[in-house]
Length: 461
Image 1 (cartoon, helix red, strand yellow):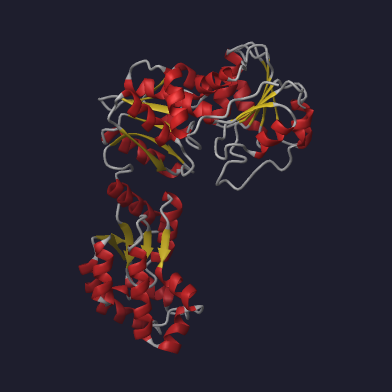
Image 2: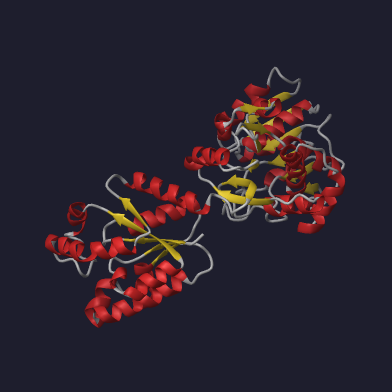
């Protein structure tokens, strides 16, 4: 994908929409004017006053060439006068897709007439004069004209749609992918790629950062694009259900889908392989739900799946703790009556965590706390001291390899396991659904583990 380059008059929305688009899509933003102010150590108006416009335009040209030379696609917000020099336009068009934000000049004039930070605008008449001089240049340079006549949200939606069209959501040829937000941490492309290679399937597997607002648009894209399936991670495992044609029983029961299979007719079917993936990984470490009390921290899609699987597999007591206890209560209400397990719920206060830990044989963290890139972790791990010595601690996170939760549990002598084993097994189960055939999962587990770094085996205390 080329860079998305926003051009237009000062006040047309380039900086604001560039930042909004970057936040929604994960594509980085390069604001040329902001870069110049950082380089000079002064506002643009002061650069003009001290050194003159020709000096500024030379700085601007250098910044533009640097921005478009980046190998990583980005959103580039240019200054209003970037199109005045043909070498700027040539550089931008050489590796960019130019979008003219065509905002009505009278709206710009109303906003900017009193804006003292804009060096070339000294009254409403100047705005109209600029528009007359530059409009033809914008239209000539533009690959796409976006009529920015409505609100920011409307313009952002059109930019997102344009971006989706340009990159087709996934690299060319990807019929399988994982979607989520965030997504930079994912190992799914490496895992599925290793499986496909090992079994001789010539398919590519991609990844896309999809915000909650864009989830319906992605579902429409997936149906129409020839995709055969995709995996779903946080925060979409529940909300994707409303966009599917059918959902298998386990996924419907737990209210969470992590695998979507797309038929040749475009029908989308949802499954949950998290349930079986975690159980297979725990069994590799010699741990089973049957006869063991389970403490689950979190109440999202993964926690819901884990709770239902633990209940189905014979855990006598399950406790679900969450920042919002009502979410844990929703899971408990849905599970009660379906299974014989006694299900308790509560908050994540230190007292609740310690009380629940005292009777837990298996503790599973199903929150993003401690995950790389999240910037949030447990405020205290003292609750681990209340666990029985034989308790096993599992974290569904796999980046970092050892979270602070697992490190502290290991130092206390507990058996531990991160989420990589679960990730590999759920991926293998998903691939069976994607391809419509049974796979040699033990052999492929070893192959994938060797390809991406073998998951750390748990130690049963």
